[in-house]
Length: 292
Image 1 (cartoon, rainbow, N blue to C red):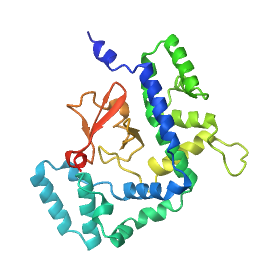
Image 2: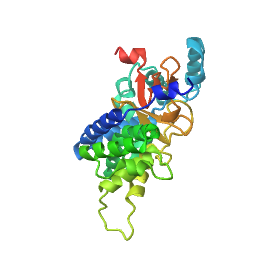
Image 3: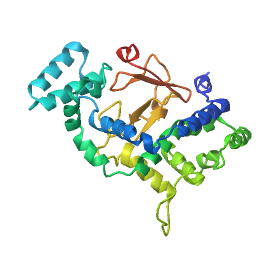
Image 4: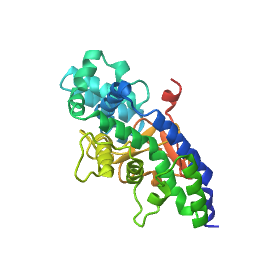
């Protein structure tokens, strides 16, 4: 009887294969030079507008109103007021900062992030996008292979090779020291030869190159560390639903720790509800966001 819940959450090999195909499709949409500007603007917005600190701790509309009113009264200038309002309306799923703020105000508020991102190269964006495309598959693979016996693993490896997995992700995932989803993704992409340094290095480490690029944009090494979507701690990575909607998470709020019931989900700063069914990550958008 006790084993039943674990069995119901088992990820079938067919689901892993489906996620591999989805990640292949996501890679085909990875950032190209003509899309670089758009992706850069997304990072700038994520780095600048991360919610109103402390607001998520308020209970009820009355407490939120009092908190915001006090914060606005103590604001030193109009840009700070705009900044607070933009963060609040985005967290409520009402509108994005770009839609609310006058263009000159938006440029001023995001100036610090623009200066920091100006130091990053396009290859950082490219490698990060590749990793983000394959993270859902890596997360599912690491979770799913726990329930597979050697014969099932061998069969799945063969099916993956038929789909193009020449770098053998299962071999990398079943190493003695179990990797994280990000490490597995970087090692697998490196084995595929996606890293092609412009200058020949004496001892190149493509895995480290990929991890460093991802860390500079999405991890603890980001120009301004991004906050976890569920608490105030710095984000170390992200998890994604099947439609590629993502949520940044810290060391505590990992994909494996997601609730398994939609009735008791984690709620992020945008009021989206997150849970998992087996190892498939699911979410529901905030009512105001889904109805817009």
